[in-house]
Length: 528
Image 1 (cartoon, rainbow, N blue to C red):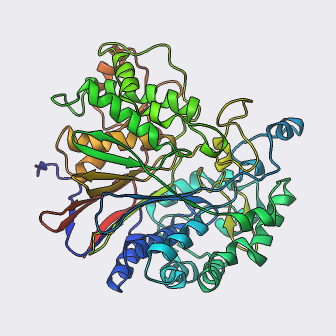
Image 2: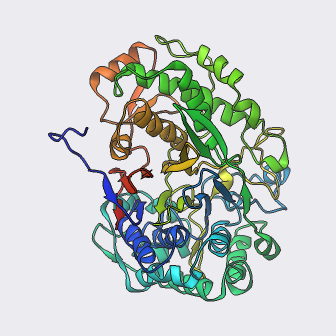
């Protein structure tokens, strides 16, 4: 039971449908689509499009997306990989010869956007409305303006310098070089026109013709190898979700090139350690979780890559034998000393949302530009801000995730779905770049090991094994921190909260929905 003396946010309950997002305007848009007769897929795309407008540093039509879908609550989960590829002409030797890099602002970090193609495919195959109809709320907000929310204003201000190198980005996403303040009204008229055109003419309006030419021209002007042909060839793909079992439930993730397998490896380790009976906010629980994370991320950084460019040993990574070996390495009283440092310790943000409709279609959906405002490179005629997913590659010859033409980088964004007794029971996700896999394991453990509801599981304090120390949120007690230090962990305060998250629990027996939305964001769970 929730402690009524310290209630925090309450769970949200409804019968007909629910959406949980990181921004109330997006949740409202999704519910409006459900009320108008749309299904969960229609509502998810509507919410994602709104977030591209009102939370533009975290997501955009110049980014990528992934989705998990349960039709009618079935445990037979559909996965969609909507991640784009590097230009075919991009190669390690070319980058090195030109003195280039995959830095956050580099044009070579820009992969071809996959989100719009994935949206169109989902709507075509599983939706009930036209793309133009579900874009209506986003177009209205972009044209008429929206009030900037507090958390969004805070991060927008932090990113002023990231935008400063591109005059087109400064022109459309600042006011005289300054980010808008909380409560300011902001308009995105160029993006509104682009969304309207895609809504009217479909996916090809983005990947071919004037919009594509605008994007390619901007990228080529900065030395990018992108071509119109590659934009036109962009195609998302259905994938079979990977799964593991934790306390009698199956947890489903998108397979590589995403990092979802990292969360599953963590859960496999923790299932052998046994967290039940421990203080959920105590040093021992967090020691086990952080050690499991360090072991799982070490494997991620060595093996996870685009499977179309080489074998990714998924079966071995999820095997019981490996889980036994990894769990045996954890000393309850001492940190493991001989593990490598994470390749990508930064907790970059994104947007995660989930929708469940009256027919119990359930969507777990994530869309991102990677770093805030992606590469900070904007195509002026289309208003498209480009992601910098290519910085997820490594520049190490022979590494499975080494940069190469036509290849997809390791992706941090991961939607998830919990299944019990053959039924989808909870679409969920946790934002925050590299943190996301830890977040998935943390939320699932909070619920299944400690009996927390979805909101409590999201509220609970978090930690992450950063490059030099555990990045610990200030909600963790002094006693817990001291216990972690005694076990050999260095501790530092997290500069920003670790991501955010959303979840909707489907109570099939009672016919109700129970939603939660992370207070680390401006978001909301809304039902009807």
